[in-house]
Length: 215
Image (tube, rainbow, N blue to C red):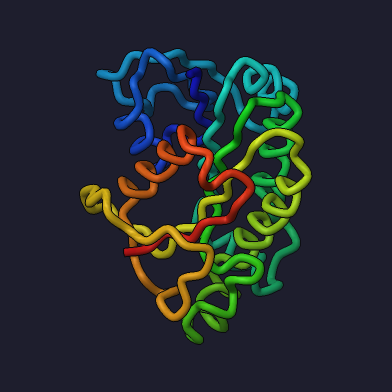
């Protein structure tokens, strides 16, 4: 199987790289120098803002892992609380996913976040009413729009919604459920998120589903 990763230099994307056979992996990245030197793989240099290039790359993959995110910044906080109308990454997740969808890989595994759409009410009050609106509101809006877009995809898809992420080692044992209430404030390592995403690329059990991940 030919695997493609968008967001391979992010923390979760790097974990996927570590767990996949590199001979079968292609990555679309803006800064190839951030990739591990010891892993041999196909590297396509490009920016996700170049949607034509991203679509052309995705058309050559069987399964694409989309592990993009918004960088945490003061600019994002200002935008979230209405102090700025300028945010350069607005819609980047939805737009990048749309470009991948146009390439029609057989399966897309999209890394979202727990607390989007119907799972918002599962989150603790402080996270739901304070942390999320101030720090990650636009990130969650973008994820929600991407999830909605993905529902129309004519091929196979899986939405992965992890709770709070850590950099701990993989346990390879975790909960994978649509709703994690009342444990929406749990944790899971990026290594185990990567483990699940790779599992969901090989197994049809989660196709067409949104899956929450936690210990």
